[in-house]
Amino acid sequence: MPIVVSGIRSTGNLHLGNYFGAVKNFIKMQEDHQTFFFIADFHSLTTHPTPSDLHTNVKQVLAEYLACGIDPEKSTIFIQSDVPEILELYLLLNMNAYLGELERTTSFKDKARQQPENVNAGLLTYPVLMAADILIHKANLVPVGKDQEQNLEMARTFARRFNRMYNVETFPIPQAYIFEGKDMVKIPGLDGSGKMGKSEGNAISLAESPASIRKKVMRAVTDAGPTEMHQTKPEVIQNLFTLMEVVSAPDVVSHFDNAYIDCSIRYGDMKKQLAEDIINFTNPIRARIEEIAKDNAYLSKVAKNGAEKARESASKTLEEVRKIIGFRRFY
Ligand code: TYM
Image (cartoon, rainbow, N blue to C red):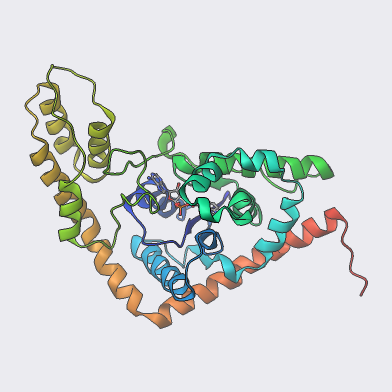
């Protein structure tokens, strides 16, 4: 059975980009794959959260994962820092990861630009830690959004390099999981500036109140409107349509699409509809998040079981890797 690994950084609430880029596929895959889903709290340290934020964020993301429908009976759900084996593999992989290739990754360059006062070594080796997350369970498939494509490519590089270096077939080469043969998903933000993201400050979270969702959507960037029939949509407008495609019914999307084509579209109406459709989608999830977040006993049971199952799988891989590299115990 194919093995699936995927994770989410614990830097804030899950947003629509996380859901439609990754979580939606996790939920489908847990039915017929061996799935490991985790909360990447080590990865969140690159931005230096305070100790109390670190803990609250992990708890919130765990509750949100569960509220979305990731099922601890079917999947191994765990917190990255509960599995120290990942760190040992991270160290071992770091020995074969090169400065040049790490410096060239777009995510490193973006982060170095976003936080010039904090370009730490953890940022540089972020893709190595991510590769360790994936390879520690010998994953075949990784459901992630388009923004993680390059990090995943690096995980493949590190897997191939290890296998080649020791002439083994220890690591499968992990592939992106693409649903129904489509391209990897990129959910745009509402500010017309590319992807929706926590650090981009343009996200709508799953736990967000209806009032706040309405406000954000109504403020989304648009243009003066089409002036010619069958005009190609500029990016800011295409972004609104892309969001609509994931939350609204197909006939609603085609109604506004036709209105764009014949220049009768009113962006105000489209935004109102989009806001209501987002709210309809998030409402039941938000209610479940609130309920689950209160249930500390349940959260701790899920985290404990998940940690045990994840460590069992991780320690098997690590034992094998240690042996291949040449570590032998003297006792
Ligand atoms: P993170 O926490 O930024 O995002 C979690 C998942 O959500 C997807 N995603 C999006 N997909 C489409 N459109 C968007 N606007 C959008 N924003 C976020 C991401 O692609 C991701 O799948 N490095 C990872 C976390 C990670 C990981 C791993 C993932 C650490 N180790 C191992 C997979 C396997 C990250 O920062 O994702």
